[in-house]
Length: 73
Image (cartoon, rainbow, N blue to C red; front, side, top):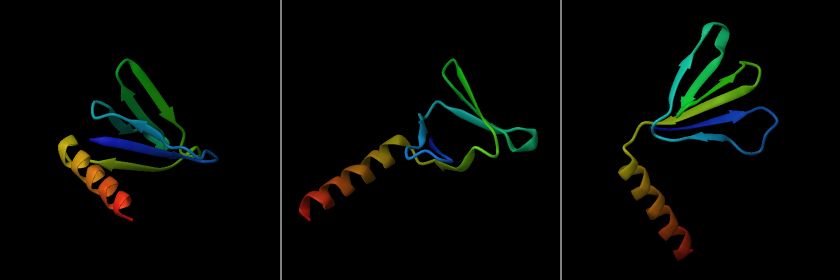
């Protein structure tokens, strides 16, 4: 699983690895645990969370195919 969190007012998303876990707490607070770190996002701060549950191998294959398509163009 790979996760991206879109944050209000930021151009770049926060990205978390396959080992990260998430939980929605009371009031809509998004809690992300990654390694020894815990990140809390208030509902007014985070806009969208995208979670890709495909195995890492499948994600890597898609990225490789997109790279090849872009090189062709």
